[in-house]
Length: 471
Image 1 (cartoon, one colour):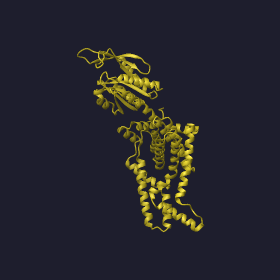
Image 2 (cartoon, helix red, strand yellow):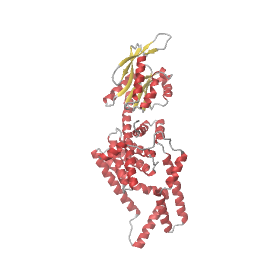
Image 3 (cartoon, helix red, strand yellow):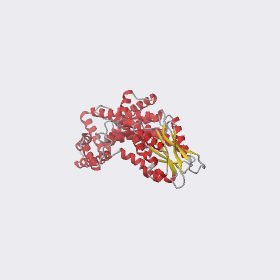
Image 4 (spheres, helix red, strand yellow):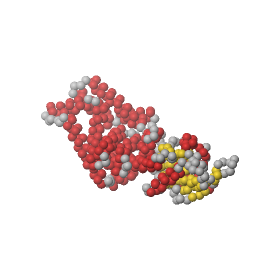
């Protein structure tokens, strides 16, 4: 939920600004909800009105809300029917589909004391609308924030000449981030369903297929964004959600998806959203998919990887009299081939603007079967133990064992092989433990605390996308 405060003193135009936002949202095809407190018989623009009416944004109904009282009494007497109608409305939001926009007018002295419209907040928060804009008097903003139990993501001064543009821009940005979150959940769904199946069946070239799909998903997501560079968050979110897999965090898929997103996003940011930028983005995605395994092995064993290759090709040349190409040529050819294949698939998606139906169905499933929302995040001890288990997997120690055997057979001392093993195990443990300890919900909270509400909203949207309806 994006929570916006429109602040200002009495008569500053807070209600007018919220009414304008509601009308604009409706014109964009996103029906608003909530209510506005319309002043009745205001003697001065800077003074409280003689009374207020409650205007329901959804259908335009108007009902009496408050009348100014006499001396020695509270400033206003509130209509019980209006207060009850507001409570019924807030309760009904829980059973309804999340609203694109809810406006509340206004939170003042009563709400700062924990009374008035503040009673609606628990139901409203549980309903989780996409955007909530609340008119808040400036002098009670801090008290209202404490009562709500969470900070406002954005505070806009109604007297600021650019207030409307800031409010509209925030709403537009939020639509972008919702698209990013939805496609991030879909990309994660492909990884959880198709990716896991291909990995379990050991299908050859499964990395090529998955990288082509991830690049195509980014292309579809970016086509509808106001700022194309935000597409980089689609794979980053999918990679983060991988941490919620029942099988636990898988380093290679998380790293692959993250790097592919950064490379694709960099290409379209530099070259623009056109065939050249999208095609280069796809090529870089494929190139990383082809080279990631080599890069990881290099990080783990260093120059011993080259020594093992040289020793192996030398043995083949001496015993079989068959020459082997240079390692650089083999790697370059492999990377170019994968890059070209993913580039072609990406450009096809860019022209057709859709994926095959079967892949669309897999995306629609999103993230079924992931760790339950109420499951506690892993502790440091649990992450460390999981990291140790990852070290015992054949995918880790078997390549290491082969490289060590080749290096020793080529005449290297045993101490070199031992130090190579120590380095690989140490780095592997640290990396695996960090991946196991990653928790996307903590990341979303961290981003929001630092003012990056857009990525936080997108990640929370992806997490909501995997929840199954109650009952």
